[in-house]
Amino acid sequence: MTTNSSAKRDISLTVNGDSKTVRAYPMERLLDVLRHELGLTGTKEGCAEGECGACSVMIDGTLVNSCLVPVLQAQGSSVTTIEGFSRDARLSMVQEAFLEYGGAQCGICTPGMILAAIHLLNKKPRPTTQDIQEGLSGNLCRCTGYIQICEAVAEAARRSAAR
Ligand code: FES
Ligand code: FES
Image 1: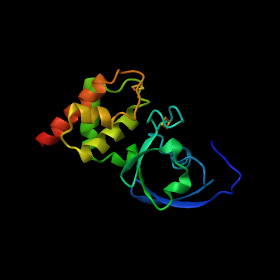
Image 2: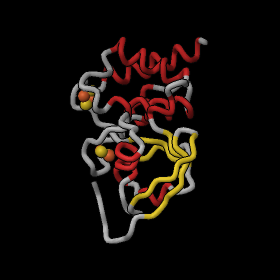
Image 3: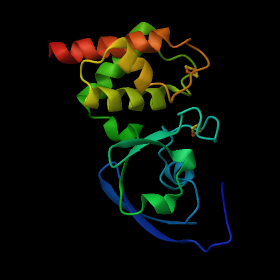
Image 4: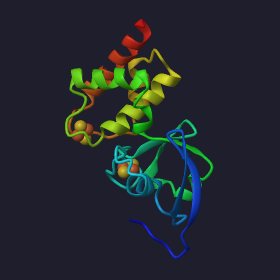
């Protein structure tokens, strides 16, 4: 866990629709606060350098790497993690497509990939292949070779459009 010389302080933010106040070092990573203080372990740690997207969350609707965000920066913001989409119809569609197309293997990248996919489909409900590739370009996967993931997102978009 990241620490620094500043004292801990109360930091208030909204997480998955609930108001939360955490006592944390201002520069502590949002990723650690989510996982260790709030028990939201769906957000994964991969590279810890902003390269892999495993730690993706949304802050006020923008997709960010939570390993690079000091928790103080999220003060007053609305943070959404993969757990926050548990009742979202789009999540189930994307999850089902990932399962059917083999888009999830070891699973470390999966929550971040799914968040990136939801973020993309919210902006572009009918994405082209290039849109999908660009939308997921910040998320790395060591297992699947990406083809299954892109096919899964395309299928989720088709199902969503057919509803
Ligand atoms: S763990 Fe944050 S981008 Fe890789
Ligand atoms: S499924 Fe293993 S890293 Fe993507």
